[in-house]
Every structure is written in C-alpha cells, then in structure tokens.
Length: 318
Figure 1 (tube, one colour):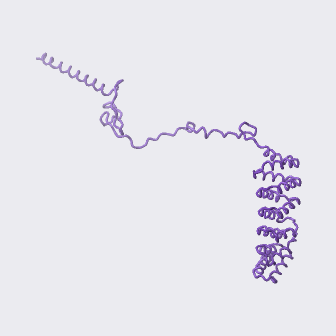
Figure 2: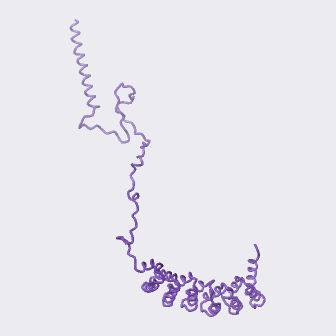
C-alpha cells in the first residue's frame, strides 16, 4: 500500500515542477527584451512605470507594467554655463577700422578738398589757387561757401579776392554765403565791402543781409540814411534804420529823428522811434521829447512816449 501511494505522489511532484519551470520561461519571454523583438509603445500622454521585482522592499502596489499619466508640470532644466552659451559672432567681432586716406577703398579727395585743408598753412599764397577753385566749383554752393570762408580768413588779400568773386558771382545764394563770411571779419576792408553790397547788390536779400551784418560797425551814417530813404525794398530800408540806431558813435540820431517825423515814414517810422529809444545818448532822448510834443501824428506821439518810458525804466537803479 505504501509503494502504491509513493508511485502516485512522484508524478504529481514532477508535474508541478515542470509547470513552474514552464511558467518561469514564459514570464521571462514576456518581460525580458530580446534583440529584434519590439515591445508595444505606450499610448501618448502616458509613461510606463519602472518594474520592480515582486515582493522587493518598496515595490509599487500598481500592477507590473501599468501605465500612468505623464507629469503635467514642466521639467526644469538648468541653463547652460555662461561660457557655453552660443553667441552671435557678428555682434562680438570688433568694428572694422576706417580705411586710411591713402588705403585701397578710401574715397579719393578732390584737389579742392586738399587745397581747403592746406589753405591756412599756405597763408596768402593760397589766395590765387582758392579763387581758381571757386570758379572751378561753379554750381556747387557747399564748396564755394567753404572757399569763401577760407578767403575771408586770409587777411586783406583774401577779402580783396573775395570782393572780386562776389561782384562777378551770378548766384544770390553764393553771394549771401560770402556776406556771412565777411560779417565774421572785423577789418575795415570787410566793412567797406559789406557797405558796397548793401548799396549795390541786385538781390534785396543780399542787401538786407549785408546791412544786418553791419549792425554795430562804424559806417557812415549818411550812407545808411540814403539806403533807408531810397531803397526800393521795404525790408532793406528797415535794416538800414536798425543799423543807424546801432552805430557805436551815436551818429545816426539826427537821421533817425528825420525818418521818425517824416509824413511818408511808412514802415520805417516805428523802427526809427525804437532806434531813438535804444540809443543811450541825451540827443536821442531830446529827439523823442520833440516827437511827443510836436508830431502831428498821434501814433507817432504814443510810440515816442512809450520809448521815453522804457528809457526811464531802464535808467532806474535796481
């Protein structure tokens, strides 16, 4: 009886062992990746949890190979070190140096530009070449203005040459540039040339500009008064009156009084009265008082009275 029970137990144990071994082989075939065998991909938005051996300490209670949603929070990645940050090579490259005047690619300077750079060093010897350059640069007012500037700064020889140029120059704009340069000079020759232009230039703009540059200069009062009396342009006449009022010697008071009291004074009457008010001489104050008392024109009397009040206010100590 014992032998028969033993015979029945042995096959049963062998079957159990074989079944366990076969189950282990099947599990290994499923869980262990093999070359050439592709595992199914997880659905989008989920990631596979790592597998841990069954029964190991800390093993997850979730089923082996279960899928879980991806972490919705953004993962922070440290910034690369500053020395590894890619930089713009163009922005970091040093600026290209400007080409030297004689280097390849540099713009060649014209003979006029070279002459203008050397004019001060050459002194009076540059007058002739500058006059030739002025004529050669006809129609280029920028160069002509620079040449006029250099000539005006070369003393009496340069001013004489500039006078010859100005009286031949057909462009009123070019003549105006020359007047501006003469106005920066304080020599008697420059003042005389400005007075000639104020008397004779064909352009009223140039005449008015010449008179403007004569303000405060010692010019004959009779010349200025003649312009104020006879010039066809009203703006030129007003500029002549202002120049009269600013004569350093105060020699224009008599002419200003005459212009202020003339019946046909027109637009010059007001500037003449204002000029008497600006003059700081006793003769100017007396002329204003005469206008207040004797002028038949009410507007003239009012203007003269205001000019006297301004003089008195400016004379009070502050």
